[in-house]
Length: 445
Image (cartoon, rainbow, N blue to C red; front, top):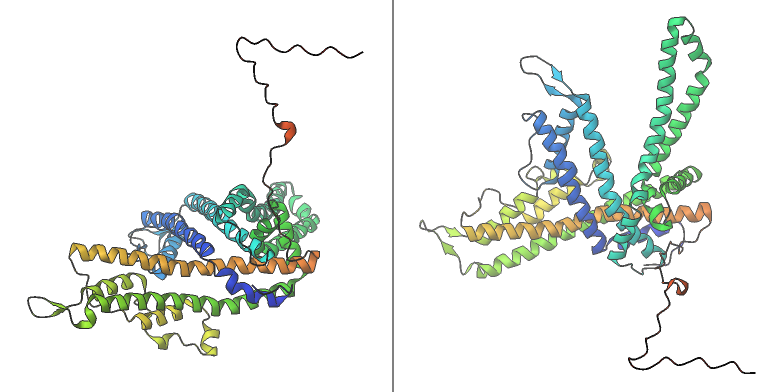
């Protein structure tokens, strides 16, 4: 890693800081657990409430899982259709509230652990000029500081809800007293208190929305608690708002290029590996089986096609839909469709060929899909690794500008050592059997 300057130029170290298999693997674990727990809970509940409106995906294409998630959210929060009533919907607010609490708790718990470990690795690596901490120690740190990671966002939410409830309670009391003809007057007189609460709620809303990415790095770099992490996040954002926004803008543009490169590199790597294996399996077309009708059987190619079709979308096969010129990117900056389109062009999946029904080929397809998912999943994990690593770098830069703390300072845990005073004195060995203990010497005159 290049020498840190303490300014925006350090953000261009983010590519190499994030390009770490350990961070990508932890991110992949977090993504997988999030999909299976949070996504699975959402899709299951939405399907239970209205099976006709939620369609669980049958493959591993990411946007289909996201589409099913959005369908489930629409059912949970908007309600299910009532049969026989045009435009009629029924909605259970308690179900939506309970789901929201469980979903938020699961999401925070997952990324407090995995995200905290990634942030700790990045914080140590940035401060120690490329020196890496063991993954085991990073996970142990995330476990010990789990509640600091977990409660930091919730403190902001609790503070906002508290002041909102104060305003609500004031309005409720005013409504009750209005039956005695004094409620509306009292509410109008005490309106400055409501305006003050609104001011504090706005500060919390803006500070938590913008400062949220700094909470993980604050705990990871300082080893601090939730309140200090929130305080630092708010302080750095409000002290250097334009610097903060500029750093986030540079990170977003630079990340657009870095993430696209890593994902396309991974897709090309997998395709070349599978394609050359296919050529070797069939001896470049010399050794190819034929069925009873004389048609060529390209088993390996069909197996690979089936595996790729479960991962790459069939809705992003036209390059014309996602152009890379400046106007098209400005109109739709989301890189997902563009990367999926280019990946389809690289692999050139032939979805017209079904999977061969032979059991050994089905097992081969299963393992092929598994290895492709793991490899491309690590590339997907780079997205999370880059995001957390860059936020850690931004935290260090802002910390130096606001607090004057150098970039190479990071919290280091000292292993507890046994203190000599706490060690019990070893007992003296007993004399052998049959020997009397030596009498003490008399004192000298």
